Length: 367
Ligand SMILES: O=C(O)CCC(=O)C(=O)O
Ligand SMILES: [Fe+2]
Image (cartoon, rainbow, N blue to C red; front, side, top):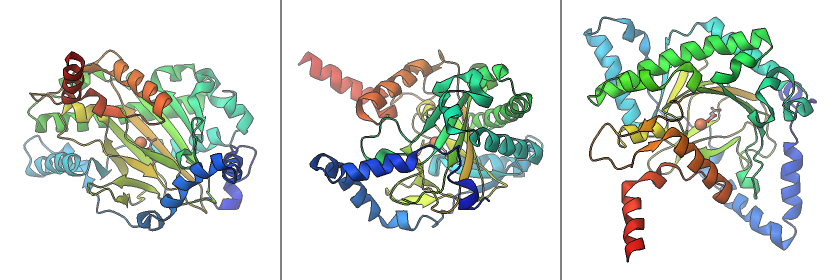
């Protein structure tokens, strides 16, 4: 863990303080008071102040998956995974088989990427320059209120592009990690598919390391925490996500009753969560759960998310009939999300693809 003095305020820092301050200044005008209102109701939320209250999220030892196919302990492990995906949409795994050295190397490289000067990161320069400027995000460029600002910066890395990265050490660290992460997610997707009576062939055919994405996240210490979030609530637009977090904590998921609960920061564990595509493919059996990050006011936090995605033209069709979602391609889903984010500031997501919603629109159109 790095102290606030060491990690905050260097030439690498995006101007988050200035962004929030300008919102606060605006709030003295009638126009701005509308913005700050959202923040007040937010600050009062009990579960935000209590963000270190952790859930009893399942912690699953997956070394049991190495046992013979019919071994009762292996069966039990597969059952635990399927139950967690149904009930929580989130779980943690230990003894996952990704060598500690691979994770360490990634952490080191991630730190170097973020410690580049802010101007270099903005211009798409430096270590990831071959990926272009669009892959770097800080705050939320579309925010119209402080509530929508994510107190973080991130690099979004399509694995298909990593061969272009010139920095040999960084490229090879990402390559190694992407390969082991793809194998792991493929294995979990197969278990979840079999639990629904389907095979894992669909995933093996449509998802490869090259169709996946990696996101490196950095959350600087936040003087406005917990009112300003590290990452605003969202679901992931993929089949499965692997999150690797350091020991700081702050990731929270939304429970059925609308309350937020924290995921215990266990650096030996990997977090697995279900994404929108798997919710659609499983006809809603597995849940893509909203999550967010509360930034620490004292410590920098680093995390990495690996998104298990199919090729763009893959059709997402439920393996259970009748399906509550219409068929759609991954490309179509992403375009719709982009459109909705631009128009409304929110991704809307799977509810756009509900058959029932379509029928309502069609009925209205013919009336
Ligand atoms: O930083 C985390 O723990 C979560 C990151 C996340 O949800 C994302 O990148 O989509
Ligand atoms: Fe996420």
